Image 1 (cartoon, rainbow, N blue to C red):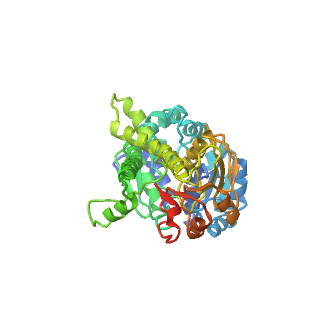
Image 2: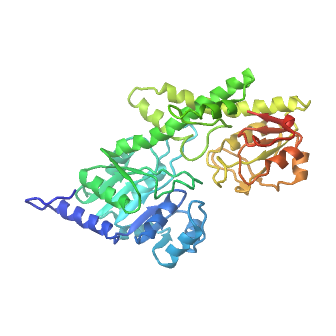
Image 3: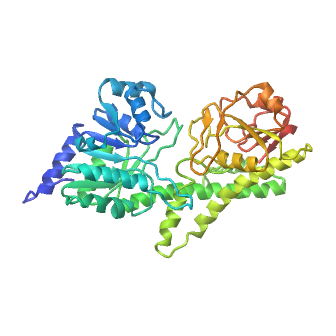
Length: 451
């Protein structure tokens, strides 16, 4: 804690003043990036009385926030409207207004390049904007997932080019986001928060900041430790998903139902956590974070073979799905080329409107390369736009009886709850189910091929 010393230094005064402003909810908070992480965070800060200024390079997104037009499923419409109506939340594209903020939180994307290397260009661009108006008495925290060392080796040198010193004039910390889109049980508020500061004062102020809105804040010794914590969490999931996906492919050859095996194993009350197979991994973390770790490990002449193997398996499983579709069509004397495939669900997991890194995109591309004709339905994703290396442009079609009947096969890639799978199986000629969405369908099971 900030303690009384025989000699009170300038850094003591700066730190004490900022911490008091935070604890009294008088500090103005700036949030850079108003996406799946940034907007829920901004709303949570506003709900306890902090004035919040959101920054984004997308003018349309800024206009929607200022109009209380919600676009993030994890934010309640009424909460966003209340924050806007009370004047506690505003959004802007004017990054010079960062000077107004006592706290600046970076919540920008950290994708991979086409060669699967980390792309931290959004972090660097945000830091450059902060540097232009950095002043004494500010704390900067990074929440974007990244490799260990980013805060200290990338952000800190840029900020100290101003001549200001970390821990004395300004404060710097890393606290990884732990957003799980669509999770109704664990939200921004009740999901524990790890935080690591560049100096003891940095840690104490960052802890005080997050402690105002998060139920449990977990301090660690450094930003690098916090950065690695985040990468480890998602690598753990990627590795375990790869294991069950590999078992799925073995079970397919053995003629054993992988879903039955996983669910039976999950009844053990200790020593196991249930992971389910699927058509691949998706989302903003699991397909990306392990590559951040393996890339950084090479700097230390260390090769994360186990993690890299898991990544290979999770890529291979998408090709396995293509093979499964081909085998299913062959069973009814159809070829994949020129077949009509109705893809059901393209979001990376059920009941959300998020398709970042969704395996459905790769599978659709692979099917099209094989000459298949693709249409899709997803109640949460009205259109697939070309992005990254993908050239797909498709619009969701209605889930009609005629559309189901016209398809040579229905391919379930996302198991949205709102879909009537009994009806899907009844109307379809053939169903390839990659999510066990049809497990409760009792009739017409001869039409179903599960992975």
